[in-house]
Length: 439
Image 1 (cartoon, rainbow, N blue to C red):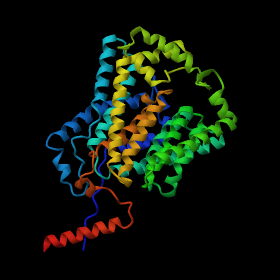
Image 2: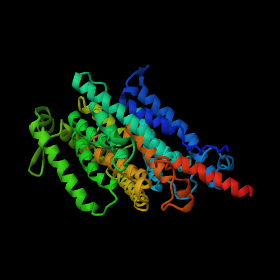
Image 3: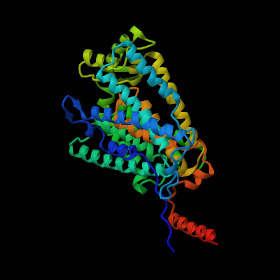
Image 4: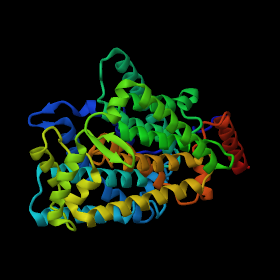
């Protein structure tokens, strides 16, 4: 007796695009075409597509529950059409504020426009993925990101041993954090390789010399307790974080180039510890002085970047996205962004807590990715890097596609093809249902 195959998951073109970007990182955007880098052109093209596609899909879902033709296609899973899969409104408020300030100040530069488009990529991509996902989309995202992370780990490790750098150290560390966020809450992605890959990536992040990323990776590893179904999360997380912290501390003190990276160069005091800021302390002091000119409203998109490039040789960017927000969009703009991020973290965490086992993994992954991105933004420019923003947005959208609590329909549609024998049982159940229907 012939049976129909299990319906295939639905997912946006952004999912494979994010996997490709995650695997390639900054390598894809390095070449130049004329006066612009491929990275800048890709940012512009991606944001333009999202400006067209995202509103169409959002409005389509809001009207009569979404596209009916797609819902009746038996060969593919139906979309997860719920009314609460939106990004926090504070992100749209931030974008409107940033554009209004930039136009009002009349100081919108090319770099400022690229920054605004980057913020839209994060918001628009997450929205588009949220309204174009089915129950099995999360599984597809997890697998694609696992393979992208494995490629990065192998290529970076080989390049580090052979002294042939392929990825820049900073770009590798930032994208490795996204892969760690995917693998840490999941128990079965990639088999035994997926279980040990977070530890390998942690060691490689430390070897890359990225200080803030190393700290963020140590924080992430504490969430390995989410893999275990037993209680006592807080105690075990504290023990695990303490162990990772001690390991990181020993590596920094015993490996010469890491010690120089963390404690050499110019010094900034953090309590009783002197840290190497690589000139950031001077850069930040200068930018903070400029910010005083219009502290509450800001001076428009791109101001911080232009000042950093004009007055500080080799700086390029502010290397602190929150200080960038204050200079460009004022204290008000920075506060709106922080409110948006906190609201998003709250939504993602609640979705994870409302589920158990593997069903919670995608929600915790999105939470960790946003948390890691927000921590790294303290000393880096991660919020304008498309190769970080797009994968994180895909994780966020894959989580927000689900309702706050799993309803019976969602549980029935849940992609559990990783369970041994599930496909056979599913086919058997369909056969029984068909026989009952005919009789």
